[in-house]
Image (cartoon, rainbow, N blue to C red; front, top):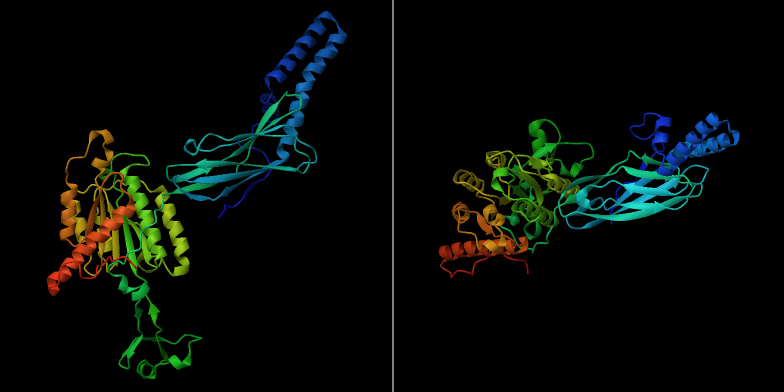
Length: 470
């Protein structure tokens, strides 16, 4: 279980401190103010009546809350607090535990401590704890749980301590400046393994290697570098270029997958964890994780043209050892992604048309005829393309209103089918696993039918491009 880093708040002056005396007096409780008022009143009466004994009583009543406030004000900076998240990144709907630790760094014991941590309302009620008297150099540890059904990045803190004297005359609040961030990422659904069209271009059973030497006359040499094996020197190229040239090593290439998320504000209606847009975000996260687990080089692309992780070749994730970092970066991006102000998909199309992007998986909202045409052109001939279309109008309908009328979603699915896409319409409440299997069946039917038409065999006997692994 991963944990977040502990942030230690150093004892010091709290934020917004203006003056010691004013702060100390502002911390007087009702009991302390009553004692102070009674003492002042007794002192005035003693002065008017000439009663010295009453003056002593009045001074005692007035000085006691002031002394408590002064002592408490001086000792409150000798308490340190820290916070630890376990874990610091959780899926929506899952719980995270927050561990709080309070240390008494002074040589004097503390009184009753009331501990409170500030958390956003969406994470639950504000946690409050009462800590008993803490000995010199002692510490106390408490914990609480937070949970959110809404993805996002939430700030926890600052931690607040309310210190009280033994007589209950004064209570002062100490705020620590340290904050921690809890990242709630979209839910990830495990997807069934299927063999995607185009997989043979780079990974798994069809891992392809770029040969540097396919024959004596087909050599792609490079300049000699310090440390290269001299047995790899290609003497014919060396004689041609006048410098040492070596044969390139075989470079394994990873299959590429681009996951496109439509974030246009006008393409989705409704809000909340059960909305169409949240389904699309969760589906995007699930596909990204699924493809990374299968060894693909992946990237996240939005309708704005922004690409994540944005490093490596053409913005794809790098080597396999960087997959975890790339997954974390893309999940953090999806945790805070929102609706864009754009109205079209042209920027994403400009990014995709630059070359062969391998497999393309897209999550679209409502598409008008123009944007459906743009989406149809995104499909490259050498790679497979899978589209999940969410009819946000149907998703926004109440359950008791009955089935949604047939809209333009089916027409858009037909347009994408004609362009070579494997497109499925996502009804309200559907799971991504079911939609993933449906796309597998539709892709298999198209490929098998095409194979049967070309070879004269009956449909269903051909090998599906989305054939499930056995």
